[in-house]
Amino acid sequence: MDVFLKIWLGKEIITQIGNFDAFLFRVAHNKAIDFLRSVARDPKFKDLLWEEIQLSGSYQADTSILRKEFETKLREAVSLLSVQRRKAYLSSRNEDMTHEQIAHHMGLSKSTVNNHIVEAQRFIRSYLARNLDIAYFLLFFAGNEIKF
Image (cartoon, rainbow, N blue to C red):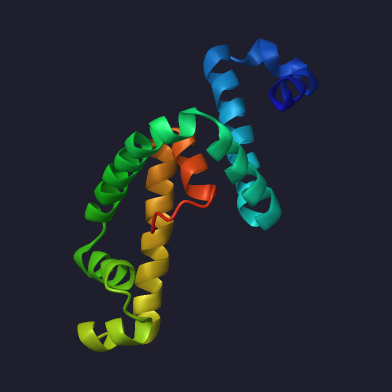
């Protein structure tokens, strides 16, 4: 409904759109991302959405497939990080090291480690947003325990 309202309100520019299918997809995509971001910020709404997903029969059937594909894309994104950034990120995520411990281990300042991890997260989110379907974001934002 939001997509068609958006199109109706901008009906003057429809004649200027070269590829309407692509435009329609982009509007729907952006609206879905906006919705998921708002869900991620609201714990009550997030819980409600998660309950709805769990009640649907397709949840159990699709979860392992979605999880495997998500993890594959996540590994791809991590592999594209620089060596230092990847090492800091993986130490934080896989070894549960604090920024201070990582800094000591890598011979870097704590703020450099923090910058590496923040930039790694930013890159990974961007990579996943470009390379995954919206269903994966539902899986992630709905409270699944995938570490990112």
